[in-house]
Length: 73
Image (cartoon, rainbow, N blue to C red):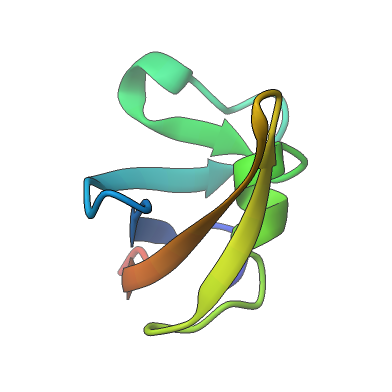
């Protein structure tokens, strides 16, 4: 997964969330857009569907699984 991708991932309780990786000045969390340097984007970069990755959060590390990756057409 690379810059510009929209990624759906599942957290440890199988709740799915979707984010789009944007540039620092383009990201808008209210629209589900995160900066490529954010912790979630850094955890997801280069991941593929089915991969599990560790996300470091203020409350400690958690594991997330990449469910879907889409790129703009």
